[in-house]
Length: 582
Image 1 (tube, rainbow, N blue to C red):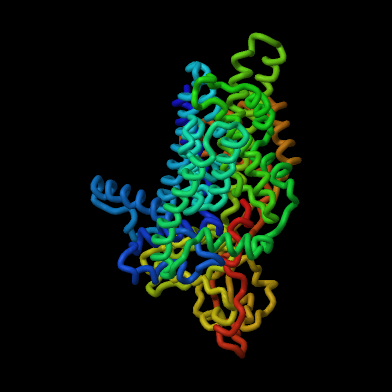
Image 2: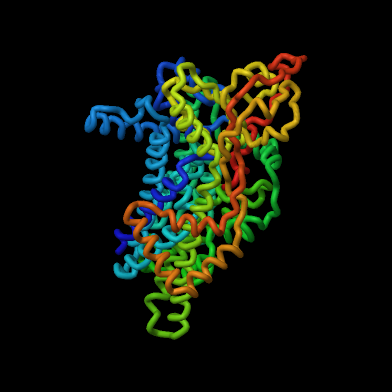
């Protein structure tokens, strides 16, 4: 049964990926770096001039280590593919490289899947009662299958999810009572995300000072040595790609924490993680309720070195969240590493109820309620995934433009200007045609844009040109632009209409039977049109981007300043990656 659930979890991660294959601005650095490594290589150094980060360096430097690992895996897969088919799926110039982006994300999703499985295996092996261990492992996997955040984001190249597989590997060691798991967390903290190092330090302190399960000095060695190694690796790799000596996590810490610039992206009360973000992780909150039962019992024999390991991690997770709450700027991704811990404790609580279901009626009632809540969580996850697929209008817009340009079959390259909102919601180098038929322009300075404005053939913008006022340097005339299409985006939930249609399905036997027949018939044909229309009744979709084609030349105003002297409009890289929410 556990292996069946493993297959289901992997399938859920893949389905989330295919439902929303595009990425957002907070993922842009990693995904663009993967593209550049695959298409331009990493050596000799002059190829780095073609990298996206040379044009859009961002507020603070970030590590290339994760991108390098993913790109290496994709390149290895391409070697096997080329050997089997005689053609590379990376260097194919006839289409955009969205399939390569999906492959890169699939590598990351598979890594996160393996990380979850490693923690589950440690849970099973650490238990004295093998039957109870398999039961706990099954419930642990079930938690991830039914929840939204980890499954949906497992394949997304956010720094937090690039590091999560390594965090889970470290946690798998700690669950088994191997304090050496701290080494992985400390190394990851130095390379990928500094808060992972904070989590490691908290676990070390709780294990030694609160539970007395490890030696303080030994823990310090497990933290300091790997952290130093991580700094060495990051410094050498990232200094090469950035072409200047840099330790990205140290630079980010200085900018965001020491200088206090993180507060520029918004502040929240101290308790926000506890009252808002953790609750949002688990909807309905049965995981938090089950955690009480999970902490009340230790599933490990007293003689085992894994004794109290779940309690150590649970207390550490809570202390870690309390420490992170001291920072005024809060994002759920900063504490995502606690989800495996909370799920493990909840799975232990559910296994505890299951083994005692025949003793008391209240145990049976609670067990039914918890399993029903898990089922509700899975339904909510499916709905949230579908709704989230409409959060990437930029990717959908550039895909539409690509098809439009290819259908025109023009001789000269088509110049497409993509506004910042489109770049923030799905446009990457992977989504662009690589055959030279399109020149994608992402100019952000109004003055620089005015210089090439009348050369733009296709415009992707959130603005309705019928009502757009003249800019400082460009006076767009509605008659000079023809609207080709509108790209909708998720704007809210329309519960009344959805409930009305659901009630009609429940009350009408004929309607319900026709609905079920249509859904199953389409699923057999790998389609879901009826189900999609049904779910759309619950969504509010509004036009977010418009695609225009030039019909005539616009009037250009006098440019008083050179483009370099004019303050640019908001850049994609000026947006805090942690502040943009799905």
